[in-house]
Structure formats: structure tokens, C-alpha cells
Length: 305
Image 1 (tube, rainbow, N blue to C red):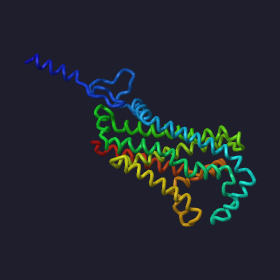
Image 2 (image 1 turned 135 degrees about the vertical axis):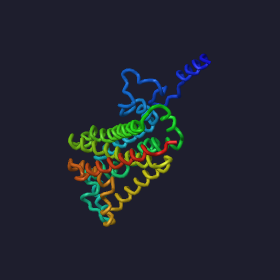
Image 3 (image 1 turned 120 degrees about the horizontal axis):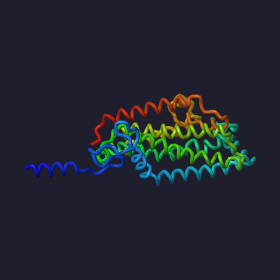
Image 4 (image 1 turned 90 degrees about the horizontal axis):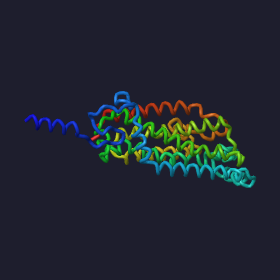
């Protein structure tokens, strides 16, 4: 009897579970020397590495596409300065109500915003964040992988902190890939940006992507399935683009500018004046904090099975 009890105790002591990314193999083993205990852990670096490696192809492809398009756009700027091109734009502006020749692709800021940073850039860069943030919670719960992650000791707060850090890092990568070519190659094509302007433009670009990622994460935290979270993000982008394009023609749409991310982005204002829209930082702070709190409120209390 005692022998059987000893055998069972030994088997229980040696039993282990399959470790999910960023967790210990055994639920009963103490923290390894030099590693923070679960109680004081804020983020999980192994889990962070897993997130970045899982989406590395998409991140690299999008970063290269953003950099390549920035190079092409800034290289075409001398053509915009050509007199014949200006005359063509003036003729086009005169035929469209609500647009004037003085502001229609006549400044570097207007050119970069209308041809790249205004409508095209956010959907391209945001696609990576839609995939990561959408799959991080809603997608993982839907496909059952979330249960594997939490089969071993890992606090929900640590998991969500790690996802938020991954969104921030991806936002920095895409922001730098977009703005760095404009700053580096600008002087070669009569499109020089002052260092202060570059700093503000880069900070705004990275923060806008980060806040957009947090908005998708908040939806993901309250929904089941990545499709719904992605649908929200795509619908939000489409509405912003429609408002951005239609506002010059339909006056009353200006009343919706306070909720339009593209309006607050104001890349043309930053490039031409060296200053951001007055409410940009406040808008980003408010929406970012609300989205972050909504993400924690939804994820910390929901059923992950």
C-alpha cells in the first residue's frame, strides 16, 4: 500500500503539461533563478517574441511596401514643381467645386497627403494591426488556442500587456519605414523636411497606428471571432476615407471631423507648418486610453473557453 502511494506521489510530482508560448512547463515548479515571478511579471518576452515571429512575414512585407512607396512619392516631387504640371492641376482644380488651385497639390504637404499619407497609408499599415490585434483575443478564443496559452500560469493582465507592447513595436516599425525615406531622400528631390518636422511627423504617425491598433484590440476583447473585429476596423477605415474625401464637397460633414482620425492626422499641416493639428495629441490620448481600458475591461472578465 505504501509502495503504491509512493509511486503515485512520484508520478504526480513528475507530471508536466505542454507549455504554451511564454509559460513554464510545470505549474508547480518555482520561477527559475533570474526570472521574475508571475506575481511581479508585467510582460512576457517569450510571448512577445512569439507574436512578432508569427506575423513577421506580414510585418516585413508591409514595411518594405511602405518604404518603397515613400521613396517613389518623394522622387516624383520635382515633377510636381514643373510649370506644365502646375498648369494642369490648376485647370483640374478650377473644374471641381470646393477646391482651389492654391491648395490643390501645390505644397509638399498637400502632395504627400493626397498621394500617400492621407488616404492610402493608414489602410496599408493598419492591415498588420488588424491581423495582430484581431487574432490576439477574439481569434485565439475562437480557434481554441487561448486555452493552451492559459493552461500554465500566465496572468491575463500579462498577456494583454504583451499584446499592447507588440502593437506599439509594430507601429514604430511601420511608422519609421514610412517617414524615414521621406526624411532621408527629401533633400535629393527638393523636398527637405526640417528635423523638428520629421520628429513630429514620425511621432504622430506611430501614435496614430498605435491608437488604431488599440481600437481594434478593444473590439477583439469584446467579440468572439476575428472576422467581427476585422470588419469593424475595415468599416471604420472606409468611413474615415469617405469623410475625408467628401468633406470638401459637402459642408455639413465638417461637423464629423472631431471623430475622423484622418482629419486629426493632418500630415499636410505638419509638413508645411512644422506643427501638428492643435487637438491631435489630446484626441490620441483620449481615444487611446478609452480603447485600452475597454480592452482590459472586456478581456479580464470574459470566458476564454
